[in-house]
Image 1 (cartoon, rainbow, N blue to C red):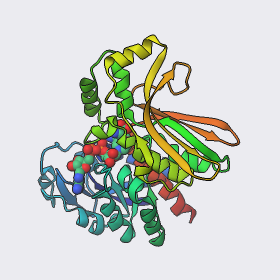
Image 2 (cartoon, rainbow, N blue to C red; image 1 turned 60 degrees about the vertical axis):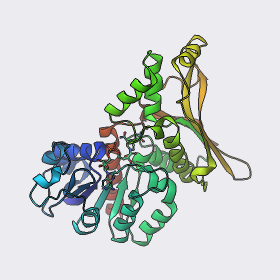
Image 3 (tube, protein in one colour; image 1 turned 180 degrees about the vertical axis):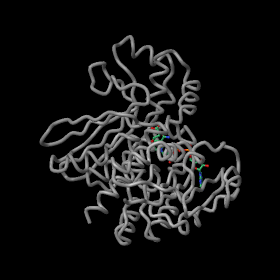
Length: 347
Ligand SMILES: NC(=O)C1=CN([C@@H]2O[C@H](COP(=O)(O)OP(=O)(O)OC[C@H]3O[C@@H](n4cnc5c(N)ncnc54)[C@H](O)[C@@H]3O)[C@@H](O)[C@H]2O)C=CC1
Ligand SMILES: N[C@@H](CC=O)C(=O)O
């Protein structure tokens, strides 16, 4: 039976939910997936760090109080985040990176990924910064070190949209896509349709674990802009930088705009769209759009996301599913680990 040793970098909503899944389901994964997971290290700026090469108790970790320096309560634990030691010296085969997304330079997560890959460890991450800003370099580094760099959760949380489009739409010539790619802003717009104020709706999204550490990234479209770069570079063979994607968010929409749209039989949605042109160039944008009720994306409500791929051979192929959520995003990390297991087994 294969057992992968896992180190968790960042222990907020997503990696804590992964620890919970491991606590609840590791035994059943033996038969269902052909492997089990052992957590050998965890590190977090707020909670501190802990390493145990024999394996940490996943249930204990998942239920640890979220108080500063909490890992110091555990045998061998420290109140400070020894990120480098956990990544390089815990004996992990796989690093699950889920620290905050930095939309400016992707740090410190990009350095965490580099350390892991250079040291021969697979990386699974839900963090958009390293991929959107340094994806090419990290993919090359992974290849040179013969390890995997997987990031399914970086777009549409647990909905497997990257792998689906890359693998199952291969050969269908994807020429563009448009979608609702931020759970928080879609949730906020939906709650505002119910009469809730903007600020209250953002607070709810934060409490539910959907929002970024700084929710400005959600409501101003910056988060979708990173996702557009990731998807366009992955699927349209684009070489987009963040600054190539025009971007405006939903913060200027008030309850009056939402109500007016309702009376007109329409809905405001934050839409990311990308197109490959005849000369091979790709353009992409993020902006609020007024969609009539018969538009396929108009019915997508709450933290649900959807993306519609325009293909040469099939026409539009639309996928919808969770766009945010702790457990949903932890599932994306699991799906990355499954993919690593399948390629290890295949090779
Ligand atoms: N929550 C969601 O629905 C989704 C989240 N993501 C991405 O997944 C990542 C994690 O998300 P959450 O767990 O919700 O965020 P979170 O804010 O709950 O957790 C992030 C954790 O990283 C820790 N951290 C920050 N800087 C650090 C450093 N230098 N060293 C070690 N730890 C550090 C923080 O203390 C915090 O506990 C983010 O990049 C987010 O954008 C992606 C898809 C969906
Ligand atoms: N804050 C993001 C989380 C997933 O990327 C969102 O709301 O979509």
